Amino acid sequence: MRTTVTLDSDTEQIVRQRMTERRVSFKQALNDLVREGRGFADGPREFRTTTRPMGRARVDLDKALRIAGEFEDGDVARKLETGS
Image 1 (tube, rainbow, N blue to C red):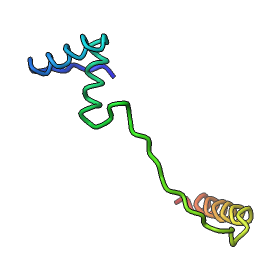
Image 2 (image 1 turned 90 degrees about the vertical axis):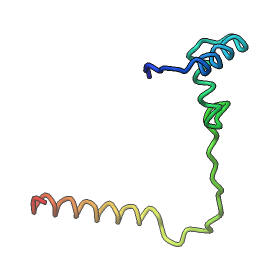
Image 3 (image 1 turned 90 degrees about the horizontal axis):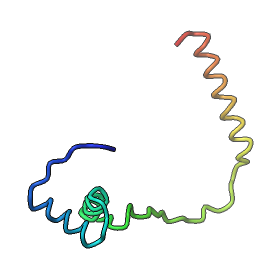
Image 4 (image 1 turned 45 degrees about the horizontal axis):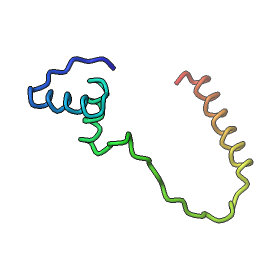
């Protein structure tokens, strides 16, 4: 995304110092500093969820999906007939 940003002189110096230290462009230095400020120094943090065993399925999921599809088809047909 391209945008115009007005930096105070002290923040400009911080960005320019980063450019010199790491030999990167202004854009890269600014993006890196913003990410560090948000706590994402190496990019976005990896999102993880904990998984837990749920045991065996108690219903045949193939049948459940077929039945759900039939209900949905009936609902769509009903809406088409009534115009709602």
